[in-house]
Amino acid sequence: MQTWIWVILVVAVIAVLLGLAMVGVRSRRRAPFETRMFPANYVEPYARRIEEIERMFVDQPRGAVAAAKLLVDDMLTRQGYPVRMSPEERVRDLRHFGKERAGRYRTASALKDDATTEHMRRALQHYLGLAGDMLSDARKEYKDVPAAEDASQGREIAG
View 1 (cartoon, rainbow, N blue to C red):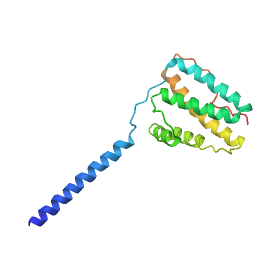
View 2: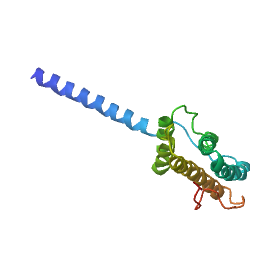
View 3: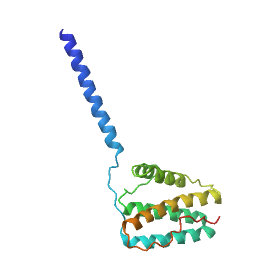
View 4: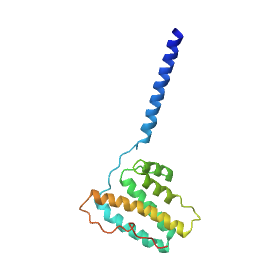
Protein backbone atom coordinates (compact mmCIF):
# COMPACT_ATOMS: atom_id res chain seq x y z
CA MET A 1 0.00 0.00 0.00
CA GLN A 2 2.83 2.41 0.77
CA THR A 3 4.26 1.86 -2.72
CA TRP A 4 1.03 3.18 -4.28
CA ILE A 5 1.18 6.28 -2.13
CA TRP A 6 4.74 6.96 -3.31
CA VAL A 7 3.76 6.41 -6.96
CA ILE A 8 0.80 8.81 -6.63
CA LEU A 9 3.01 11.36 -4.88
CA VAL A 10 5.70 11.15 -7.60
CA VAL A 11 3.06 11.47 -10.36
CA ALA A 12 1.56 14.49 -8.61
CA VAL A 13 4.97 16.16 -8.28
CA ILE A 14 5.69 15.52 -11.97
CA ALA A 15 2.30 16.96 -12.93
CA VAL A 16 2.95 20.10 -10.86
CA LEU A 17 6.42 20.53 -12.40
CA LEU A 18 5.01 20.11 -15.92
CA GLY A 19 2.32 22.68 -15.15
CA LEU A 20 4.91 25.16 -13.92
CA ALA A 21 7.01 24.56 -17.03
CA MET A 22 3.99 25.26 -19.27
CA VAL A 23 3.28 28.51 -17.44
CA GLY A 24 6.93 29.50 -17.90
CA VAL A 25 6.76 28.83 -21.64
CA ARG A 26 3.56 30.83 -21.99
CA SER A 27 4.97 33.79 -20.08
CA ARG A 28 7.99 33.89 -22.39
CA ARG A 29 5.67 34.24 -25.40
CA ARG A 30 4.36 37.55 -24.10
CA ALA A 31 6.33 40.62 -25.00
CA PRO A 32 8.78 41.39 -22.21
CA PHE A 33 8.34 45.12 -22.84
CA GLU A 34 5.57 47.63 -23.38
CA THR A 35 5.18 49.79 -26.43
CA ARG A 36 3.93 53.33 -26.78
CA MET A 37 3.36 55.68 -29.66
CA PHE A 38 6.28 57.86 -30.65
CA PRO A 39 5.70 61.58 -29.96
CA ALA A 40 3.33 63.50 -32.26
CA ASN A 41 6.06 65.93 -33.30
CA TYR A 42 7.88 63.03 -35.02
CA VAL A 43 5.02 62.15 -37.39
CA GLU A 44 5.65 64.69 -40.14
CA PRO A 45 9.47 64.46 -40.01
CA TYR A 46 9.15 60.68 -40.40
CA ALA A 47 6.77 61.17 -43.34
CA ARG A 48 9.26 63.54 -45.00
CA ARG A 49 12.07 61.05 -44.39
CA ILE A 50 10.09 58.32 -46.14
CA GLU A 51 9.73 60.57 -49.19
CA GLU A 52 13.47 61.38 -49.14
CA ILE A 53 14.35 57.70 -48.99
CA GLU A 54 12.08 56.93 -51.93
CA ARG A 55 13.80 59.62 -54.02
CA MET A 56 17.20 58.35 -52.90
CA PHE A 57 16.44 54.89 -54.31
CA VAL A 58 16.81 56.09 -57.92
CA ASP A 59 20.51 56.94 -57.53
CA GLN A 60 21.48 54.90 -54.47
CA PRO A 61 19.30 51.81 -54.11
CA ARG A 62 21.46 50.06 -51.53
CA GLY A 63 21.82 53.26 -49.50
CA ALA A 64 18.06 53.82 -49.63
CA VAL A 65 17.41 50.34 -48.24
CA ALA A 66 19.92 50.93 -45.43
CA ALA A 67 18.31 54.31 -44.68
CA ALA A 68 14.85 52.72 -44.63
CA LYS A 69 16.02 50.07 -42.16
CA LEU A 70 17.52 52.76 -39.93
CA LEU A 71 14.27 54.74 -40.09
CA VAL A 72 12.14 51.72 -39.13
CA ASP A 73 14.52 50.78 -36.33
CA ASP A 74 14.44 54.35 -35.02
CA MET A 75 10.64 54.40 -35.12
CA LEU A 76 10.46 51.07 -33.28
CA THR A 77 12.96 52.19 -30.64
CA ARG A 78 10.96 55.37 -30.01
CA GLN A 79 7.89 53.18 -29.57
CA GLY A 80 9.59 51.24 -26.79
CA TYR A 81 10.95 48.24 -28.66
CA PRO A 82 14.37 47.22 -27.35
CA VAL A 83 17.46 48.06 -29.38
CA ARG A 84 18.38 44.90 -31.28
CA MET A 85 21.48 43.82 -33.12
CA SER A 86 20.00 41.03 -35.21
CA PRO A 87 17.00 41.03 -37.53
CA GLU A 88 15.82 37.76 -35.97
CA GLU A 89 15.49 39.43 -32.56
CA ARG A 90 13.62 42.37 -34.10
CA VAL A 91 11.26 39.98 -35.92
CA ARG A 92 10.60 38.13 -32.67
CA ASP A 93 9.77 41.42 -30.94
CA LEU A 94 7.48 42.53 -33.77
CA ARG A 95 5.68 39.19 -33.77
CA HIS A 96 4.36 39.98 -30.28
CA PHE A 97 2.40 42.89 -31.75
CA GLY A 98 1.59 41.74 -35.27
CA LYS A 99 2.56 38.89 -37.54
CA GLU A 100 2.20 40.97 -40.70
CA ARG A 101 4.69 43.58 -39.52
CA ALA A 102 7.08 40.88 -38.38
CA GLY A 103 6.83 39.29 -41.82
CA ARG A 104 7.56 42.58 -43.56
CA TYR A 105 10.62 43.14 -41.43
CA ARG A 106 11.81 39.55 -41.97
CA THR A 107 11.41 39.80 -45.74
CA ALA A 108 13.13 43.18 -45.96
CA SER A 109 16.03 42.19 -43.73
CA ALA A 110 16.69 39.02 -45.74
CA LEU A 111 18.34 41.11 -48.49
CA LYS A 112 21.60 39.53 -49.63
CA ASP A 113 24.82 41.38 -50.48
CA ASP A 114 24.50 40.38 -54.14
CA ALA A 115 20.85 41.49 -54.39
CA THR A 116 19.51 42.82 -57.66
CA THR A 117 17.90 46.23 -57.91
CA GLU A 118 14.51 44.50 -57.97
CA HIS A 119 15.27 42.71 -54.70
CA MET A 120 16.36 46.00 -53.17
CA ARG A 121 13.16 47.67 -54.41
CA ARG A 122 11.07 44.98 -52.72
CA ALA A 123 13.04 45.25 -49.49
CA LEU A 124 12.56 49.01 -49.56
CA GLN A 125 8.82 48.58 -50.10
CA HIS A 126 8.61 46.31 -47.06
CA TYR A 127 10.57 48.68 -44.83
CA LEU A 128 8.67 51.76 -46.00
CA GLY A 129 5.35 49.92 -45.82
CA LEU A 130 6.11 49.10 -42.21
CA ALA A 131 7.08 52.74 -41.57
CA GLY A 132 3.87 53.87 -43.27
CA ASP A 133 1.81 51.57 -41.06
CA MET A 134 3.41 53.05 -37.97
CA LEU A 135 2.72 56.57 -39.27
CA SER A 136 -0.92 55.67 -39.88
CA ASP A 137 -1.19 54.35 -36.33
CA ALA A 138 0.34 57.58 -35.02
CA ARG A 139 -2.03 59.71 -37.07
CA LYS A 140 -4.97 57.78 -35.62
CA GLU A 141 -3.54 58.27 -32.13
CA TYR A 142 -2.88 61.97 -32.69
CA LYS A 143 -5.95 62.99 -34.65
CA ASP A 144 -4.82 66.63 -34.87
CA VAL A 145 -1.74 65.74 -36.98
CA PRO A 146 -2.50 66.49 -40.65
CA ALA A 147 -2.82 63.38 -42.78
CA ALA A 148 -0.49 64.25 -45.64
CA GLU A 149 -0.23 61.39 -48.10
CA ASP A 150 2.16 58.76 -46.79
CA ALA A 151 4.91 58.26 -49.31
CA SER A 152 4.87 54.52 -48.71
CA GLN A 153 1.12 54.02 -49.00
CA GLY A 154 -0.17 52.99 -52.39
CA ARG A 155 2.75 54.16 -54.53
CA GLU A 156 5.21 51.97 -56.30
CA ILE A 157 8.88 52.71 -55.87
CA ALA A 158 10.64 53.36 -59.14
CA GLY A 159 13.07 50.63 -60.02
